[in-house]
Structure formats: C-alpha cells, structure tokens
Length: 73
Ligand code: SF4
View (cartoon, rainbow, N blue to C red):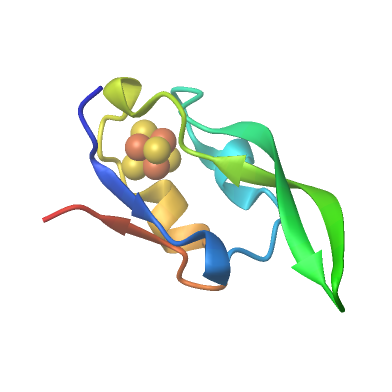
C-alpha cells in the first residue's frame, strides 16, 4: 500500500471528523489498546487504512482539530 498520509495516533482525539469528510472511504474505525492509570483499555480511533484510495484532497488534514493528520512529503 502506498502511504500518502502521516497519522499521529498520539494526537488523535478520536471524534472521527476524518471519516465523515473523506470522499473515498480511506478511514475506518480501528480498535486499539491504550494504557490509562496503569490499566489497559480498548478504544476506537479512526485509522487511514485504505490510503491507496486517497486522492490528496486535504479535507481530513483541514478538519482535524488536533493536527493528527499530515500529507507525507
Ligand atoms: S486527503 Fe482526502 S481522500 Fe485522502 S484521506 Fe484525506 S479526506 Fe480522504
């Protein structure tokens, strides 16, 4: 798969605006395990799974409130 985006999971707020704006369904919900106060918890976050379909429109980069998505240079 060709990577077109850099996604920083540690900055992601998890609201999923990217899933809503993407015209090509590049994003999907993914379950990850995070550590919180010494406990392991499952959490759902958006993830750019299908980057080969990305047309570099920039909508997800613009809408992300935490700056978690960038174009790969
Ligand atoms: S740049 Fe556009 S096509 Fe690519 S993942 Fe973001 S919203 Fe989807």
